[in-house]
Amino acid sequence: MQTLPVTVTVNGDEHTAEVEPRLLLVHFIRENLGLTGTHIGCDTTSCGACAILYDGKPIKSCTMFAVQANGHDLQTVEGLANGPTLHPIQDGFFQEHGLQCGFCTPGMMMVASALLEQNPAPTDLEIREAISGNLCRCTGYVNIVRSIQHAASAMRAEESVAAD
Amino acid sequence: MIPGQFSYHAPATLPQAIALLGEHGYDAKILSGGQSLIPLMRFRLAQPAHLVDINRIDGLAYVREEDGALRIGALAREADLDAEPLVHERYPLLADAIAVIADPLVRNLATVCGNVAHADPANDHPAVMLAYRAEVVAEGPSGRRVIPIDDFFVDTFVTALEPNEVLVELRIPAPKPGSGGAYQKLERKVGDYAIAGVAAQIVVGADGLISEAGVALTNVGPMPIRASEAEESLTGRHPNEKTFADAARLASDAADPVTDLRGPADYKRAVTRTLTARALQRAAERALS
Ligand SMILES: Cc1cc2nc3c(=O)[nH]c(=O)nc-3n(C[C@H](O)[C@H](O)[C@H](O)COP(=O)(O)OP(=O)(O)OC[C@H]3O[C@@H](n4cnc5c(N)ncnc54)[C@H](O)[C@@H]3O)c2cc1C
Ligand code: FES
Ligand code: FES
Image 1 (cartoon, rainbow over the protein chains, first blue to last red):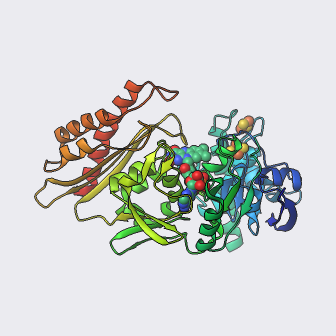
Image 2 (cartoon, protein in one colour):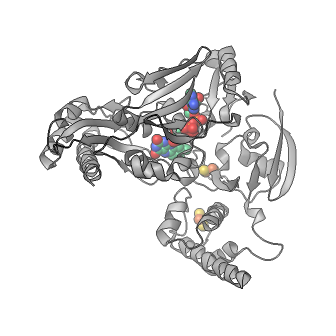
């Protein structure tokens, strides 16, 4: 059985492991690195529960092999909070009741963080387009859109304070 | 689910990739965006013994207009094309299709060349390339060859590529003055494959008549379909509702759908007719604006 070394940067920390080529990136993140915030919701690349940032772009980590990520930069939901302080996106979901069971939430938040990085003042439609690869079986999406808008205003406010 | 075992190769150059493909023949598969191949491997519908990952080869992630054609390199992702103003300004048929392929996460990895190489009749780019009369550039051990799109699709999931060839570039002819195109797709929900899809590309001459037309259909047959009779009916006529209605009828005659979860065959034929008329209408608006 072939195994290959993989070195990735996850939330700023470098990790190296020896893995089978068929190991999916999501399994590597959850099982080898123990970062279980990244979820698995389907077998068909349909749900987005496994969304992470790959070199800053949201992808479905269940549809990439861990060996492909060798040398790349990954961000998972564990990288959002700053110690005990919630990231504005996490706070937005808390304030606006953006989750019920919470299974889709890590994926939603990672997609939101890539969106707000690119577009600090998205319209509701732009948010809906950005999360169109992420399924939520509970909320009906309305509160998720509100949560992301809440985060967007908080982050814009932080920016303008920082600029002053 | 977990894919079967395979050996992984990540060549740094095209000649190395081609040599690996030559060595392993039909036991090897190219891995580009992985957004069709990995789902198939997870269901063990594909169990290649070797994967040749081309993502580490430099110089394949381009999209540019050069020598009268839009050139799309093997590693240009759907999202890369969507971010390119040139694609929106000059290739609206292509831009329309990208916006309705899968979802934004899949589009960050999926390649346009992989979409065509996969030759899934449910994929949207094959019909787009037929309507544009694009060319496929394949590289093998003895160099490059150019394959006209009409010779490329051989059967469901089967193309004219040899097992040791890489699809390195798609070439879409640069639009002539008076060109316009559009893609229309009906899907059950965001990210799904088409119930039916129609790609249309026309040129309206200085005399106000249609001088060239490309019409092709997605997911209404075992292969992507060129609606040749619809194309012929369009040329030499005024771009108006009557012309488009006639072409739409001929396009739905060319469709060969099956009844499945996405609907009964009759329904898909009716959808093809409606979408063809809409795609041509939109293409004409763009040609004349
Ligand atoms: C949830 C979901 C929804 C989707 N919806 C749509 C949709 O609506 N419309 C649509 O068109 N597609 C859709 N797709 C498919 C997606 O666009 C795929 O990415 C595309 O079909 C294949 O491109 P890829 O780069 O991912 O190729 P891969 O998955 O890496 O490869 C696919 C096949 O093509 C071969 N191949 C790849 N690149 C080359 C090359 N350069 N030369 C020779 N052979 C090559 C591979 O060996 C493999 O057999 C969807 C996918 C998912 C997961
Ligand atoms: S687990 Fe559902 S898309 Fe990855
Ligand atoms: S909160 Fe339950 S799936 Fe979204």
